[in-house]
Length: 396
Ligand SMILES: Cc1ncc(COP(=O)(O)O)c(C=O)c1O
Image (cartoon, rainbow, N blue to C red):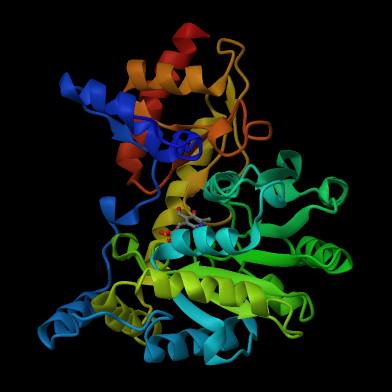
């Protein structure tokens, strides 16, 4: 029996690379896993008041389905955050809760992309946008982010990539995998370009409060006119990746997104609801103290500084300095490897360190790079990069 071509074409480098690592583990190897952005796997703990709120929700029997659009009080709390942080003022109907940002990416793509339609994605960028575009028959068109300019998007390249088939522009800021935070100038130019071509913008802001060298600005605060769909969630900043909750805000001053919103609403009803007790508890994450943020960002900053220094000290590797999130996207300059997949597999087999090959974030703009997370403590990073350095100095 055959599976569909569409399902057999799905790839997700971040988790696919785990399969060869599991083979080594079966034979007793201990692998240092730097492939996935899950803070709770290391010394980052969900704030106590949020954990207690989940226990309370379960105890008082908030165990039924939620509203398909999401809990009212949670959505009100989200609108308050968006107003305070980004100056975004919308109605309750413009905000919905999804099972992680991932489900929102899937639903908005399903509501907008017909076969042959094009979607502008950052290259390199988070691969889920490309995968769902392909899944629904569309074509993702990467725009160049310039490594020499700390991975800021190249506006001239972006302009050249717009065609009559372009449906929307994806902005991921702070960016995964580069850790880049876009300047206000770049954000304004990108959104103005979208406006000129009557495109809407998806702004993925899931790392918004995890910055080390300055603060994040939403494009929604810089351009009040262009229709935007803001994606955000609780996986990163609130240390709740396993709860699988995200939200979408339609910032649409001229009602251009009405039909797309309806296309998403229909899918939300079809899948019934997101996790209800977790929705009750994340109200606490939004309204309660955010003391963990300072400690978390301080730890990440120290680890960022350490990993940058180590990578730039290894012959054959070089890196820019991430300004946010918890990923680094170094360049493989050594001529010993022909492609990033071979490099990552070689490092896995010889150093027992798991990285993600760069082409998984864009086949062109990601090649000869890799992504590593700097979530682990310095001692773990030290062990990983001691091993990589020794090996690379040996093979040249
Ligand atoms: C830029 C970006 N968007 C979305 C997601 C998915 O987030 P969620 O856990 O909310 O599905 C991730 C996860 O790593 C991400 O890096």
